[in-house]
Image (tube, rainbow, N blue to C red; front, side, top):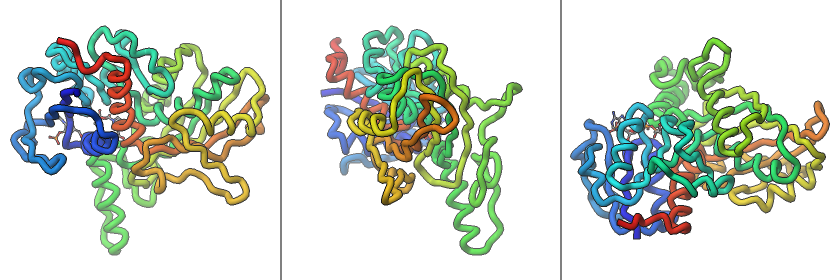
Length: 341
Ligand SMILES: NC(=O)c1ccc[n+]([C@@H]2O[C@H](COP(=O)([O-])OP(=O)(O)OC[C@H]3O[C@@H](n4cnc5c(N)ncnc54)[C@H](OP(=O)(O)O)[C@@H]3O)[C@@H](O)[C@H]2O)c1
């Protein structure tokens, strides 16, 4: 049995981590919940038991085997090495550690072998948009070698955490009542009834931080440092569930029919591709599910050996909490957890 600490337990991802641990019957013997000073001392109910939220300090990590952390990266940069120094393995959801060459960046269906070496005691969970994309790309790459990927995202408000959701819900409610729409606090502009292609700060090269995360993280996870990727990340007025349009150029021919066969049997993928009925993955029906949903698999008309796909997943689940819990489950399977002290 494993001793677990959930850091950022009160946040949008932290809340789903608690849910996923229960649903997966995660084998823990002890669990602690940590958050910011604002929440320390507050009660938190889990499995009908009342816990008190603890502060982020070395004593809170004493004897803990695995930490599931989802705080802002500025916090993780301090708290994750603190927990690792106390002997825990940290699975960190923030962007703070993802590109550190000494930190594996893992999606278990894609590169579980990267868990063979965890020199800093930290494993990074990739960005939500990256996770669902690499799960869909992996079987195509294994069959026909990726050459180039063009991706446009349709990202949900909860990608900006609990505050993002508050923005969207308050705006939808106001519109429904015919009242003035409250301005966004977490998003760059009003999201309800709108689409934001600049919800992340744009750099001088015209690309956002989110777009560069998708480029760099995908190359690291797939061990393809030269893979050509061109992303456009966009926020849409959806509560939870990111959607992505992918155009994939392959080195070898792969028909849509054969691609579907491979996707249907790939781990973590639910193929929803009913051409006649027109059924496609929709965020509304992917919420609360752990899989990556793939549909609209068809030939890319613009290039030889090209495929176009539509990929949807729950950003708080496979994009964060589920992937983190699956990493912990993989560490248990590999005998790395519980820690031998
Ligand atoms: N939302 C997503 O779809 C998603 C997907 C993948 C990765 N992530 C990453 O996961 C992390 C958490 O995201 P979220 O969406 O859950 O955010 P969130 O809803 O804003 O929650 C943030 C959590 O971190 C805690 N926290 C904030 N400031 C802190 C501080 N100074 N010291 C200690 N704890 C602090 C908060 O505690 P209090 O409640 O006490 O303030 C809360 O528990 C971020 O790094 C984010 O980039 C998010």
